[in-house]
Image (cartoon, rainbow, N blue to C red):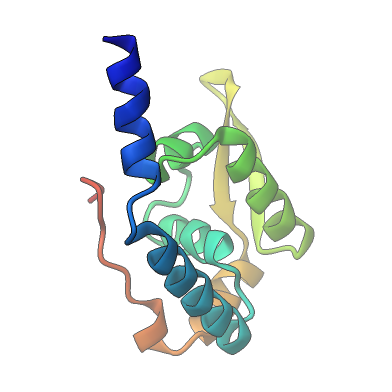
Length: 125
């Protein structure tokens, strides 16, 4: 049975559509970054905070199905640009909440509206 799981995982990882999809995603991300100045991860973080300011890093990690360390790296870069700030949750000091700064809101609004559109996926609302 354990061997079946290994074979099943190999089959999914080696599916012929995954490599071309990954290439397309990277190309789209590169074009978007060139046109807006935001990487894909930064864009996801900004659009999420624009709609749900004060979301925790953990909530963002779960929403996008990525490692919390990845969210932390993206947020650190945005924080370094003065676009996002982190604050400890007053009710639970272990939780770090994320907020757009005024500069973050202004920079986000400078992106053409058609590029700001986002359709929630994976059960996100």
